[in-house]
Amino acid sequence: GQTKEAEINANRFLNIAHRGASGHAPEHTLVSYEISKGMHGDYIEVDLQMTKDGVLIAMHDEKVDRTTDGSGYVKDMTLAEIKRLDAGSWFNAAYPEKAGTEYEGLQVPTLEEVIETFGKGSRYYIETKAPDVYPGMEKELVRVLKKYKLSGQNAQSSKVLIQSFSQESLLTMQSLDPAIPLVQLISYSKPAMISDVELSYIKGYAVGVGMSHTKIDRAYVEQVRNHGLLIHPYTVNERADMERLIDWGVTGMFTNYPDLLEAVLKNK
Ligand code: G3P
Ligand code: CA
Image 1 (tube, rainbow, N blue to C red):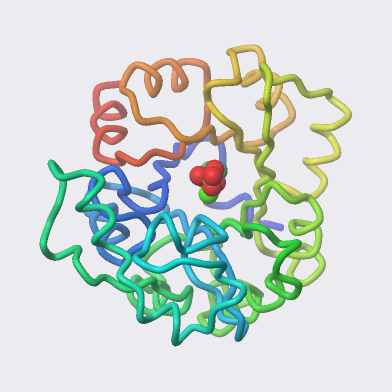
Image 2 (image 1 turned 180 degrees about the vertical axis):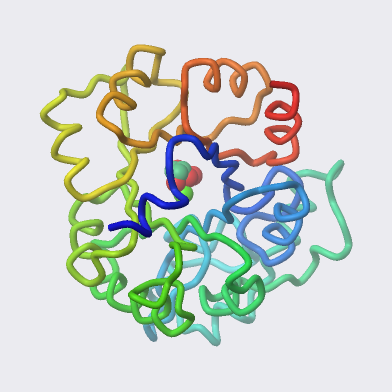
C-alpha cells in the first residue's frame, strides 16, 4: 500500500537502536530506549515475549535469568511476577565502567508502557520472538497497535515495522493487518546465500530482510536491493563495519550504539 512505501523506502537510511541504546544502558528498559532517542535512533527495537497472563513485554530471552535478578521462563510468570524483577542491576555488575545507580531496580516494560511513554512521535521495530511458544502473540500485538493507532487505516504512515525469524509469524501478522510493513529475519550459520526465487517470495509479504552483518558481502546486498527489498543487518557496533556496510548499500542497520552510527553517517 501507499503508506508502506511513503516513508519506509531505500532512500531513507534507518538507524535502528538495538534493544534501545543497549551499549550504554540495560537493554529493553525505558531508560535504554530514552537514551537511544537522544542519540538519533530512528527506531526503537523491541523484542517481545508474552507473560503467562498474556501480556506482551519487552525482553530478548525466553527466560528472565540474564537480564533480571529472577529466574525462569516468561511464559510461566504473570506480569505481576515480572514487575517485581530488577532489570537494571545485572548491567551494573556486568559493565562496571558503564554502571549507573539510576539503573538499579528498573522494571521490565510492557509493550503498552513503551508506546505510552514514547508515543506516536517515535518509531518501533518490533520482533515477535518465539512465536511457537506464545500462541496468539500476533493477535495481541495487532490489538495493541490498533489501540494506539499505530496501524490500520488511520495510520498516516507506519510508525511500526514488524520483524521475525518466523515466516509463519509474519504471514499471521499480514493476515491480521495487511497494512503493517514486515521484515523477514534470516539466520545463517555459513556465508549468506539466497536465491532470487526466495527473494521474490519474501517480496510478496515483506518490505525488507535482516541478517547478521558477519555473514554477508557486497554481492548479497546488491542482490537483495535488486529485488526492491530493504536490508537491515544486525548487530553492527564497530565503526569500520558500519562504514563498509553503508558502502555496500545497506538501507539501515541495528546497532547498540546509535550515537556511533549517527557520527558515521554524518561523516559520509
Ligand atoms: O532483530 C534483529 C536482531 O536483533 C536479531 O537478533 O537475537 O538480537 O534479536 P537478536
Ligand atoms: Ca531483535
